[in-house]
Length: 327
Image (tube, rainbow, N blue to C red; front, side, top):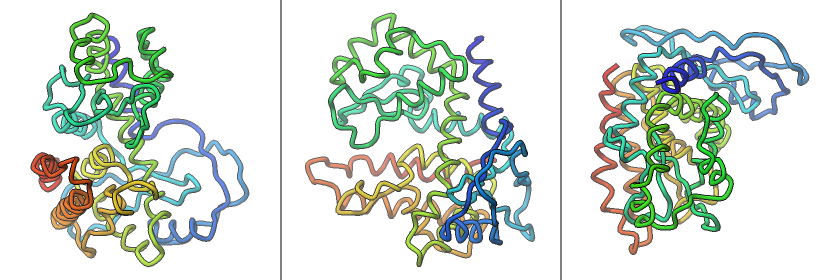
C-alpha cells in the first residue's frame, strides 16, 4: 500500500500543476496565432529565460456552462500552457474509467496481449510494449511510463528495468500467457495495480502537452476550428476525461506518416471533424459523433486482412462514455 499512497500524492501534484519553475521562449508567428486562438489575445514573450513564476491560474469548470466565459487552457508550442484545475476526485474518475475501458477493471489484464496484435499491452492505459527488434508501428509507450514511475520514487523490479531498454521479454501472446503464471509477472502486475493514479496522472500530462501541438499542427484553414472545438470540450464538465481518454486510446494524430491511405485517426482528426459553435452536452455529443466517423474511416482504409471491423462495436461503446461522463 505504500506505493499506492505515494502514487496518489504524486498523481495529484502532477495533475493540478504545482511543480516549480517554467521556461519562457520567443514565439514564432504561428505560435502567436495559436495563443490568440486559444487565449483570445496575442501573448508577446521576451527572449528565452528561466523564471520562478508559478503556472498561470485557470478557473475551475464547475456547474452549469450557460452564460459562463470559456476558459482557454492551452498555449502555443513555446510551452506557455495552463491546465484546468482538476480535483483529485476527477483524476480518480479518469483513472477508473480508463481502467474499465482498457481492462474491464480486471487487474489480471494490466499485463496483457490482445488478439491480433504483435505487442504486449501494459498497465492502466494498455501502453504498448514491443519485443526487441520489432517495428513499433503504434509507438512503444510502456518504456516511457516505466521511466515516469521510476522518477517518481517507484522501485522497479530488476528484470523490468533491464527489459525496459531491451524490449518486451515475450515475443507472442502465448509466451506472455505462460509467463503470467510466474512470480515475476505477478510482481509487475501488482505494481501496476498499485500505481494506477500515478499512471493516470502520466496520461493526463501526456494529453496536456499535446493540446497546443494540435492547434499548431492543424492546417491554417482549420486552426481556428480545432482551437474552438478543443476549448469547447475542455470547458465542459467531463470533457477533460474525453480528451485524455481519446489521446490514450488512439493518440494525438500528429504523426504525418501514420494512419492508412494518408489519413490518421487521432484527437486532431476528431477535432477537425467536429461541428463548431457547440458547448456543454452538445459539444460532448459532437465529439463522440466525430470520433465514431473518424474510426469508421480508419476501418474503411485499413488492409482487409486485418479485419478491423471486428473492433468497431467495442470502440463505439468506449466513445459513448464521452457523451455522459458523469461529473
